[in-house]
Length: 285
Image (cartoon, rainbow, N blue to C red; front, side, top):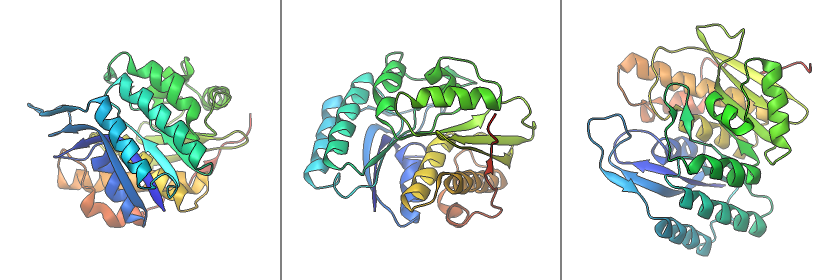
């Protein structure tokens, strides 16, 4: 089993592939990690070194892994932070080629675009490419609440809103939409809600809110969800696994008092989360 993971990479800390690779490997899945950026660290520190990679280099790396047979042996493509609209366009070409070569291959697009606190934090030409080129190719998308509202072009504040907008979005491509950090009426202030919607069913899972917000949690969630799906778990079980694993990592990070997630030392809670929070079916409206 192999996942091709295409996203940012940092030398220090845990975001992008530097948050996703180890958790996926921990589940017995090989990872072909293709960087879109090479940075010393994530933004938010006093200094940052490195750069977004040239699209020609990323394209060359993708061609190179195709030549090694990575596409034929892969179960899932996962994409995250891309760095430029040109890379998004080349990724769309790669996904289309890969799906043609391996019809069983699934694509999970984590549309890393922004959040409620900061708004859009990527270049202005990237969000339309992600919405119009990548999401229609995806089988699974994992936006946060802010990104989901951008993708569907509407504000959503209730479960019924989310389900209706998600199913409209599904007519353009993805079969599974997972919304992280959902901000909905009725969600208790001390809990985090994550939703998964498919064409005929939907689920929600609530986990206790941990009083920290390190970078890379979305990248880690997508990695855990993808790992669970590749291992054969159905969507509600994969949702439960990923949300429970994230809670375990955040709880341990809060205990340690560090800025960066304690991913490596949290291997046990990512592989077998305790406590495990169940995904509950959302009744049809």
